[in-house]
Amino acid sequence: MATEVSKHPKVITKYRLNYAQYSQLRKMSYPHLVEEQAGTHELSALYFDTADFELMREVQEGSIYQELFRMRTSDRLMEKSLVAMEIVKQFDGKNSQRNVLIPYVNAQSFLRDYRKHVMKKGLEAQISREIEYLVSGKNLVPKVVISSDRIMAKCLKKGRLDINFDFNIRWRSTDFDLRKGNIGDFVDPTLNVLMTVKSDGDCPLWFRELLEELSICETSFSSLIVTYKEHLFNKEKKHYVSEFVSR
Image 1 (cartoon, helix red, strand yellow):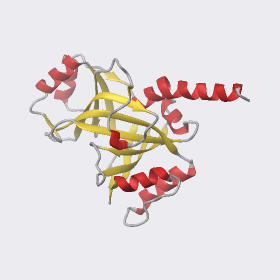
Image 2: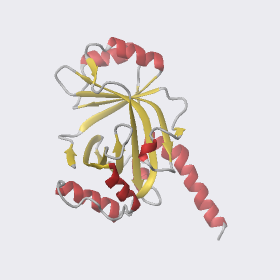
Image 3: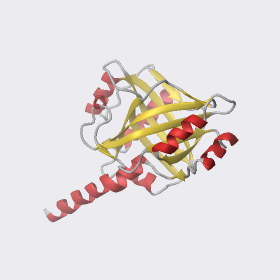
């Protein structure tokens, strides 16, 4: 088991790219950017929420303080693979993440009884308490899996700059087994590539000039928000309407 804490909040900016822009960006950013881990990785994140989607609604409404809990994997799972039990916080536009890494078999136990905290020893106490308080205090339950195929890159020069390129972003609100990988319906069928840039502040000048040259514009696109608004919210409304009619 292990713990991870982000050292400081990151500024996150997103960009919507077509395939031509992506190809040109990769070519023109060399040698500034290199792949952090070779190849494409299959990511999945299982988000927990209250019965009425309280946490997702706060994100969608743009609250100053936002908090989410998710179970995250960075590649196709096997029984001994580690998953991150992660709290994501945002305050005044800056994100921070705190997580504990546990074997997937332990994570399965957590899924079977998610109101009972399974991490008792050998973990950073404060993070463990935060997870337990959030999950049990708000009665969080598994709600939706967001998955994608991702290429990760980083800047070699001074200054922290991490870039993720996500393809085939999908969602599903059933079958929460993360070993199934990137399956489900497309969050947005018109989206080719979502580029997420994480930095300590301002991006390097060469990168800003490259974005301008390729006409790549910033976007507010959020896979979770789009999934909630376009898919889960409509499903939730239908549920409450049918429940009301049946009374």
